[in-house]
Image (spheres, protein in one colour):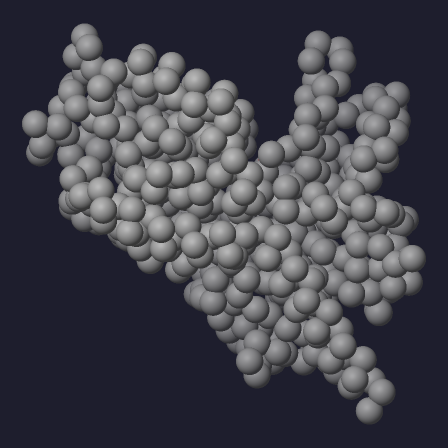
Length: 472
Ligand code: G6P
C-alpha cells in the first residue's frame, strides 16, 4: 500500500531535556494540526529533526522507539550541524535573504557545505523508508535541495514541496552564491506551493532568469518533466480556535486577566522573536501614539508576547536586547502606579491562555516587515466569537492578500501605523463586526484542511499530466 511521507526540519513534537530525562509534548503548530490526519494514518510517516542535540546512543534508541509508535522518524543532528545547517545556512543565510534582510545575510562556504550535507542526511532517511508509489511532501526553506536529491534516488516518486516563507524577488535571490543549486534542488519537485501569487511569480522569474525555463500558467518543463507552481495560502484549523474561545477555562482566564489589568483597552501582539516581525518598529509607533494622544494614556495597554526563538543566532540575541530596552524605556516614560503601557512576556503560552488573550484584545497589531503568511492574525479572527475587535495588518504579510478587511498598513510608515492604532481604538462596533464577519467567513472556508486537500489535488493533477505525456 503506497504511503505518504511528510518531511520538515522540525517534527510535530517537542522533545525537551528535563534533568536527565526526556519529555515529549505534541506540537501545537499549524502544520502539525493540519497534517495530523495524514501522517498518523496507516504506514504514513513524518520525518524530521527532534529539535535538540542527542549524543547518547541509548537516548537515540529511546527516541526512535517512542517516535516509531507515533509514525515519526527522527533525523539526528550533531551540535556542529545544528550550528552550521540550522542556525547557520538556514537562519543566517536563507532566512534573511528570503525576507529581504540582506544586510543580515552571511554567505559562507562551510555553512553551505553543512546545508548540503544535512539535506543529504534527510534524503538518506527518506531512502530507508521509500517504496514504489509513495508520495512525498517536503516543507520549507531548510530543505530546498531535498526534492532533487529524492528524485535522484527514485525518478518516479511524487514529490510535493511547500515554501512557508516568502520567495524573494530575483534581485534578492540572485545575491546567493548558490542560487542555481538551490533552484535545481526545488525543481526536483513535481508540485511547488507558495503562500501568495507574488511568491510563486518570483520563483518562476528566478527559474526563467537562472535556468532559462519559461512557464505557461505556472507550468514549467524541467527536461521533459512538467512541474507545476501555484499559490496556495495556508489556512488555520478554524474550529479549533473557535471552540477554544468558548471553553470554560478560557472564559475563566479572561476574567482573571481582565481583573488584573483593570479597565483598559487592550492591543495584542504575539510573535516569535524575529527581526522580520517588526517588533521594535511597532513599539516605536505605540510610543508615538501615546505621546500624541494624551487622552489615551491610562486607558490603553499593549499586551506583547514574544516567543523565544533562534536565540543563539546573533541577530536574534541583539533583537532581544533592543526589545528589552525599548519596553523599559516606554514603561519608564509613561507608566503610572495603576497603569503600565506595555505588559511584556518573553515566553510561550498554552492555547487556552492565548485564546483568552485573543478574546480580550480590542485590537491585534500584526505588523511584520515581511512574513510568508502569519497565522496569528487568523487565529485572532477565529477567536472573536462576538465579532468585536479590529485587526491591524501589515501589507508585507502573506495574510494581507486574503484579509483586505483588516486595516492594512505599511510597517515602515510610522505615521500610518499611529493613525491606524487610533482608528482601530475608535472604530464603531457595527463596523468592527461587519469587517470581522467577512474575514471569518473566508477563513472558515479556506481552513487548514482545505489547504491540505488542495495541495494533494494539485500534486495528483501534475502527476497525471506527466503520465499522460509518457503514454502519448
Ligand atoms: C517559520 C518557518 C518554520 C519554522 C518556524 C519556527 O514559521 O517557516 O519552518 O519551523 O518558523 O522556527 P524554528 O527555527 O524554531 O523551527
